Image 1: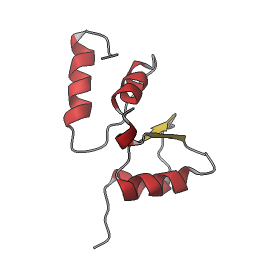
Image 2: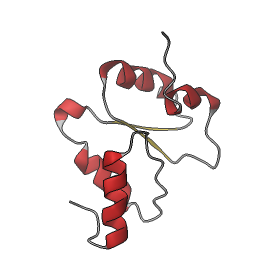
Image 3: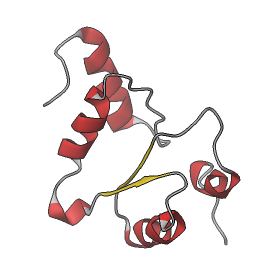
Image 4: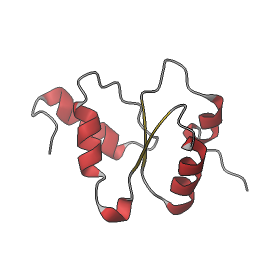
Length: 94
């Protein structure tokens, strides 16, 4: 894979792959981003990459959630936009 072979990178990769929640990755060297893009690049995963403030963010998020696609939100700031909180909290409507 495209992650470095050091112990920390290997542990972080395992955490991302096996966590029950969506991971928030602080990735100043962009190694994790390229690893995720490579890992999720299969056509059936239908990876969508968006940024906060992008005009079609909500539309792409809805499509990804409805269809089980992978979505990568890049360049989050120190606070997370309220519109993303139900997704992050995995809130569902019964």
